[in-house]
Amino acid sequence: MPVQASAFDTVVVTYSFCTIPDLESTFSEIRIVLKPNGAVLFIAHGLAPDEPVEKTQNLVNPIWKRIAGGCNLNRNIPALISQGGFKLNNIESMYLPGWKPASYSI
Image 1: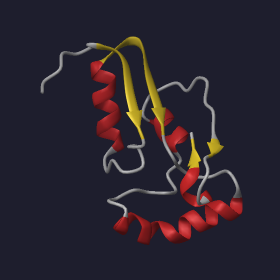
Image 2: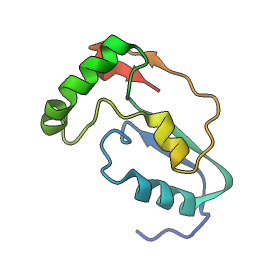
Image 3: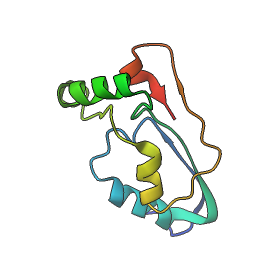
Image 4: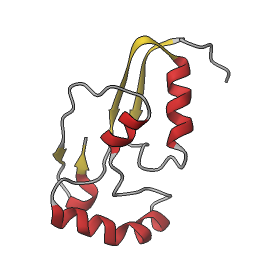
């Protein structure tokens, strides 16, 4: 469905940044449809700040990606969003209940 430029005040993305193969194109499309001063609200799992968990994420990711539909456990989501041209405000993170390598959420 074609969308007019600057059509949306807010774009919401839930647990997708881990799987999208071409985030650069995705961020470009978001910038096109988002109004100036619009907001991107997201929740994602990604690279954990704790070294033992990060090591496990990096070790398991090649297999995880194959069995989990392309999902990456070890993407640094905040860094990728910043590189995509967005300013990060009010970032919160935590481990949700479950297996730590898959439950670190931003």
